[in-house]
Amino acid sequence: MSHGSHGHGPVWSGGHQPDRISIRSIVIFGIGTVVLVVVAGVITAAWIGALNHHRPDRLPANLATADNVPDRVQEWQTPGIDLTRLRAEQSARLNSSGWVDDSHTVARIPIERAMQLIAQEQGEKKP
Image 1 (tube, rainbow, N blue to C red):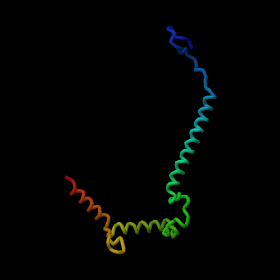
Image 2: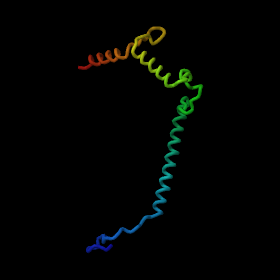
Image 3: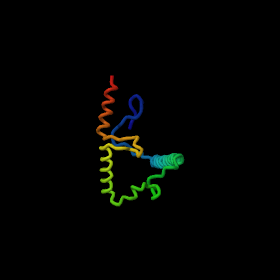
Image 4: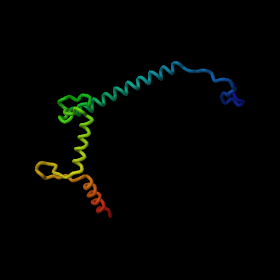
């Protein structure tokens, strides 16, 4: 490279660019990245620990035991068939009317009818 006619910095004179890869810079970048990842992990672990400390009643999903799993789930012997049966029961409940409570104070109606009533109610509210 040579300087331009007015002395304003180097002028490209062709050829190849010199190899100026700094091993030191690569090592510093790598160490900085590792430190950043470790600090982020420590901060995340502390944050999760603080959140769990405030909610001791909730167990992580991987700590499910026989004591905290609903009885209905413990009864499942064939999950695929049981899930199909559960969905059928839910669908029947959604599409039928009946009493929600034993004292007959709260009733349920089919979901389609409930949606019609809500749509009708919303239509009446519009100006």
